[in-house]
Amino acid sequence: MTRSLLPTASLLMLAGCNMAPTYVRPAAPVPATLPTGEAYASPAMTAKAGLPWTELVADAGLRTVIERALDNNRDLRAAIANVQSARAQYRVQRATQLPTITADAAAGFSRQNDMRQNNYSADLGFSAFEIDLFGRLRNLTESALETYLATEEGARSTRISLIAETASAYVTLAADQALLDLSRQTEASARRTLALTQSLNSAGLAGKLDVHQAETLVEQAASDVAANVTQVAQDRNALNLLVGAPVEDALLPVSLDSLIAGVAKVPAGLSSDILLQRPDVLQAEHQLKAANADIGAARAAMFPRISLTSAIGVASSALSSLFKRDAFAWSVSPSASLPIFGGPNRGNLDYSKAQRDLYVAQYEKAVQTAFREVADGLAREGTIDAQQAAQRRLVTASQRAYDLADQRYRAGIDTFLNALTSQRSLYNARQSAIATDLAMVSNRVLLYRVIGADQ
Image (tube, rainbow, N blue to C red):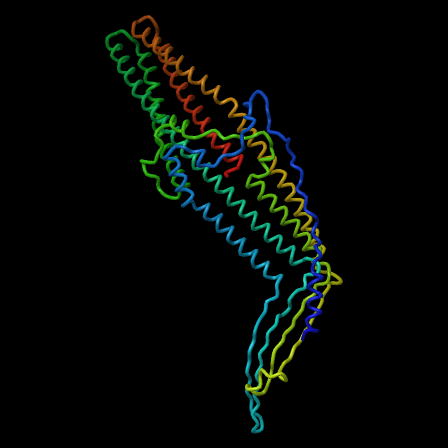
């Protein structure tokens, strides 16, 4: 029995050859540092890139909404299920590297010519176990492992994206609520102006043209009210979908101004190396490693495939003597196969090499995309404060201009058209101010997502 196991042990010791190419991470096709220039703020020298979402969000309502989304969102549940599926597939593939040991017991009874024959047997062994001399099974297992790790990074990317999308939807709802309030205020003010103009027209102090001009702003504001009511409703539907359940009124944003203080700025650091740790970039790299291992498996398939079937057991015609020394038996049956002509092996190898080249390109594109997204976010961050300050000054100047034009019109020293023009300018300036505030908070959320370093 001991001698019979020596060939098996020798073959197992030989199973150390790996025909996969040595993996080398492709050089990042982006500059080593994040961009600088007029559009970019000077980075803090000691700033650590990225921010946990719990530090990003200080607003209590938004934190609760995000926590619910992480518990209930169906896309995130699907991503987690994909991770579990990939992990199970990895375990299945890894099991092929080990022999499957089976135990069998049998009994047979027969009678012929008034003679009865009994046969009893018990065996322990394994069947068709492949000796992985050239690393085919090992590389297939490595490929399955990297695929599993890629799905894990994909789930992490989905989680970060969900947090960012939920925060963005919440902020957008706050901005559209602000626009709805502004349009309602403007409509109410325009109706008061229209009523005044109609009174002046009845008294012969204003013409019909002034009345019709006043009506234009009323109807424009009324149209905006209807559109904003629709938009707020759609924003709530989008938020409910992300959260996976209806969000009650008590958790809705109080105001856009509160979110400016309730969402923190995200540090980006100095080096572009942080981008290599983004989940989508890591996912692309794991896919590349899986493709690299597939090349090793395809190469190994072109060499002999050796398998071994062996068993040890006992057999006897009497159950009482089944486990006696004379009943012992063993068998070892090695086999080897190698395709000589035809077969898909060469095509599979060419395919695996082409797939590796594909994943190299996808990895490099993921790095370039990450660099562009962070650069865009930093360009917005570097200028948004100045834009917001200018926009608020514009609102103040427009308010003063409207107040003066309205006073001059009421005093009869200026035309109604000037007052109307000033009122429209103020309305537009306030709308632009809300859009700028939305852009500021949304960009903070964007930088959280594109840096992807949620510790």
